[in-house]
Amino acid sequence: MSGKQKANYIGRIVDWSKQAPIRSAKVIFENKDGDSVVSNSDIEGIYRFTTNTDSNGVLQGQITVEANGYQTHKSYISFGKDKHDLGDITLVGGISKVTPQPSVSTTSTTPSKSSSTSSSTDSTDRKNSTDSTNRNNDNRSDNTSNSDTDKLIPILIALMVTFFTFTTFAIVSAIRKERFNDRPNNLINFRELPIYQAKSK
Image (cartoon, rainbow, N blue to C red; front, side, top):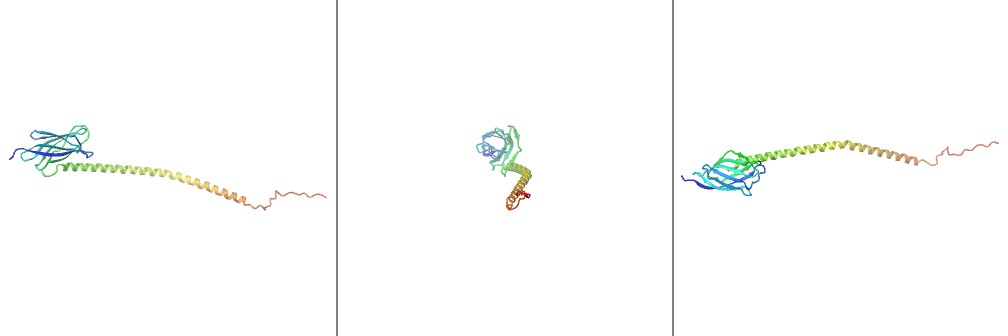
């Protein structure tokens, strides 16, 4: 059997809530023999390092990730000799403190699958919660609009009744005045006739 072998590895550091890459994160890997390497993530959150594997080409050890404004991540990993992509490591925002993570071990599958599935589920839950909140806000707005409309209806009815009342009164007054003006001028007004007294003989 051959001795220890050196191998190159790559991974990415991601913000858990925003699903965005985290730059300048400090990545420390320590293998089971106590040898450690340090790497920093670039603008795309990607980090790389070279380290020794065991005689079978298997990578085993503890990985620690530190970043300003995030909780420190620690987990034990184990990858087969054909796996060099460590996948995504998600960090939770908050006070920097150690956040233990379950061990990751794989020889045939992509290590980031479990993390990606969890992140996708969390993202879907947050999206559903946001949609539900928006629907509730829309319902409250509709209820408020309907309430305002119900209050305006009686006022509009009162205004319409008042308008028609005044209109009717004005029309009736005009008709009466017109009839009075159309009265024939040849009608005899007995009160205006002169009075003649018979002279005595």
